[in-house]
Length: 410
Ligand SMILES: [Ca+2]
Ligand SMILES: [Ca+2]
Ligand SMILES: [Ca+2]
Ligand SMILES: [Ca+2]
Image 1 (spheres, rainbow, N blue to C red):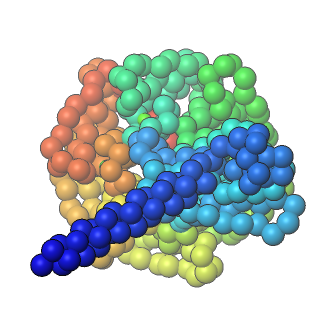
Image 2 (cartoon, helix red, strand yellow):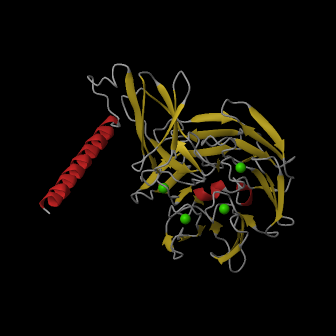
Image 3 (cartoon, helix red, strand yellow):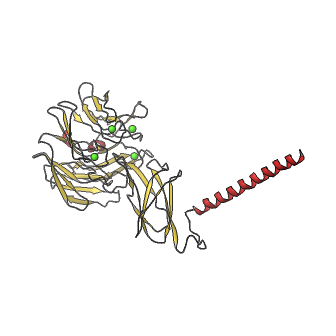
């Protein structure tokens, strides 16, 4: 009896000791993974460093499971962010290029960056369809552009502040986009008089100009190569040609569409690159040139008098065919790319301008209209709640409409 009790005691003590040793070894392992190098650490300096950083989304939440490539002079290594959105990899001392892996739906800002281990290389993930988001969170900002004075105003979704910035002249066509890929919308215009694009990537007053296109062209800016930066591009209504500028300044042309077509570029196949597309008002037909496989899709959706309002309403990463019908009761007809179902929603009044965008930041475009009268009211229907709210005093040309074809509205 006594010896049995002693045996149990002995076993319990032994188990306690084993658990303690396991804990100690785990603590040691955790210490080894610390992304800092102490000078006297033989595993680390002077020969090794930890290349580390945090990956977040545009709402500031950490992202686990993101694959990060770390490329030095030799073979690239990959690692994955942990539950805290951290990545860390021990490498020989040197300078490395760190690149998180983008997807069709999302890109990272910056796209890649250099690190020698001294400081974290952090990244922020943004949805590719990131419309009128001046403050760089995940939400579309109510914003307008005064075509007479060149004043841009945006209502920050982050803090409710109104930002005013003068950029452009009378008769300029606004072509908002993220031209430098930092996740924030840049003020940009196309000046038909000299066929020149002017882009301000921040509000410091600096900008650049690029002559591209012809005076009768329509701007159709988009991310045609999928690098996360908006590309300058035009549609030539005279002959149905598209001209798209590459980041190196060269360009290519694609014949796609007819004279009366409304260009409707968006990423319909979800590969992260904008697809050339037109809406033909005569019959309500859409023609899409898939960037993924070069195939042409032709789909009947809408009728004469409709305006294309393509956006990703169902949140599957592919733009949905959609039209706005400004009749007595303005109606939206959306063809979900996820399940082929139709959404028919009465929203707005005749004379309203459609301003779809992701105002609630849930990854799905929200139906919204702007009323260009003295109230300048925006009627927004967030996809997350289905209720609505109104923002007033933004009655100039709405920036979200600049992501749709300017042809219908200028
Ligand atoms: Ca925003
Ligand atoms: Ca595409
Ligand atoms: Ca979709
Ligand atoms: Ca939404």
